[in-house]
Amino acid sequence: MHHDPATDAQRADRLRASGMRVTAGRVAALAYLESHPHSRASEVHAALAQASPSVSLQSVHNIMNDLTEHGLLRRVDLPDSDGALYEIEHLDNHHHVQCVVCRRIEDVECATGLAPCLTPAGPAGGEGGSRMRILEASVTFRGICADCEQAA
Ligand SMILES: [Zn+2]
Ligand SMILES: [Zn+2]
Image (cartoon, rainbow, N blue to C red):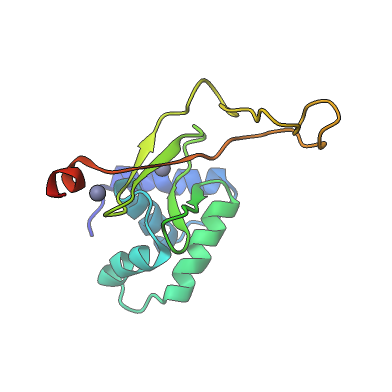
């Protein structure tokens, strides 16, 4: 895996700006997820292991957790995916649509405006309701992609 040095320098800047030490593994994980959003830790591990075979799956899990805690990655849990998926955090509160057949995942725009783009019709936040201030809505749309529809 070869990266443009300028781009890796920018990734290193992002790590430093988030208070993290710059390591080759963290930079490589960010680079991989930029081109492969919604990847599992095991997929990131497979990609990183091509360049450095000694990297362990556990260390990649640690990288994913550290990057997520520091706000550089977003962890996505979708009902039809077993296990966590990761993508670069863009602070945009986008949602996901997942094909029920092949499980391909795509980003979709916020339903409307800024987070939270949806507010519950029920009591949360309302009078007499729970004392939850809604921060964001996380919506998974389920659909069928054009390829699967054609194959059916
Ligand atoms: Zn599909
Ligand atoms: Zn996404």
